[in-house]
Image 1 (tube, rainbow, N blue to C red):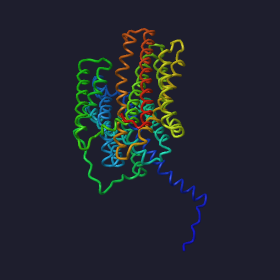
Image 2: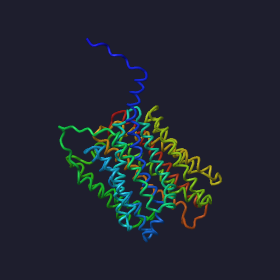
Image 3: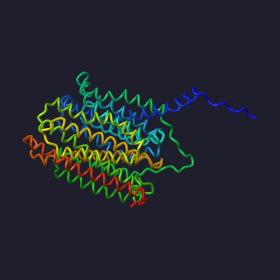
Image 4: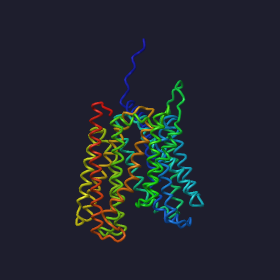
Length: 481
């Protein structure tokens, strides 16, 4: 007979618990950096456009492609790389994506001409799409289910930090080292993310007897072209919808129809369209796009309202605009804790209700309240968005089977990106219609434009709330239609 084993001492139990949580913390650190880098890559480049235009002797219209190429690559490829991660292994592909992002950042800094820089930015966008698609997908295999909300909140915080940090950090780097530094700063951060991911992320599990997965090349190409056409239709013209925009939008509609036909016949489709009939997933994607459209309104309308409506200087306007991203950075982790404690459905509804109240306040805001009257609802709107995002991401990713996490994570990020590009165009057009000729509009007209924009935003949030409640109800009844 074996002697009974002695129970572990308190110190041994503490040591075992610490060793068990260390890989989780290391994994979360790597995923956090992988979420920070794409957001930083988006926001840090904008501040360097004037310097790059001078250095590369290019007109400003062409220099805009430095930003556009990055966003187009992310939007067009994020679902496809998510599916590829499901097939070849998420850890393996995430490591490759981080390495590609670092290499492309070096190429951006070394580019001698504008169009080589644009090509390098598109390559950087490919690496960013891999990181964005797979970070949320990796949460399910690295974090206990009871802590999923906290992990999603942390990733939301890191995305907000990257967006907030980009302009300030970019300005400092350009002033000291030149525009190339805004790309080279990514290299050590990506190196650290690569090291942590290689050390702490769990190895990909593959079934040796499983059939070799088939990649849907036709569906992938059609979806990339369709999304690229839609993103271009929403961004070219800077708010003026012309013949070129209409042609691109028509091409996107035709592409979407062809994509659906191809996917219905494909033996191994990129997206299983039947999944979209699941109430929780369909509602989660729709509400994510609607809320992101509304959040873009703050970036489109805010600068004009503060500078022209309230007559604030550039420095003060910049400080006021930083309030929203700062709130998002501080609210992400607490939002995740609330989701873990009270549930994703309840906190998602609370976030949407808070956002609706904030948009309604902005739609009725009198200019006489000045800066405090604008900042208070913006802070409520941003905090509500952080809560909704943590809850929605947790709800959508919580019940997904393991071999679909990558593609669903890509679709969730895609819905947000499509909301942002749609918001920049549509909400900008609503503001212009309400304010009249922006170049010569008086302060009262700017106020009217903001009221009109957030009136539409209130309606969009209410629509999102209805979809959210309907999706929750159908999920409980088990009705997929």
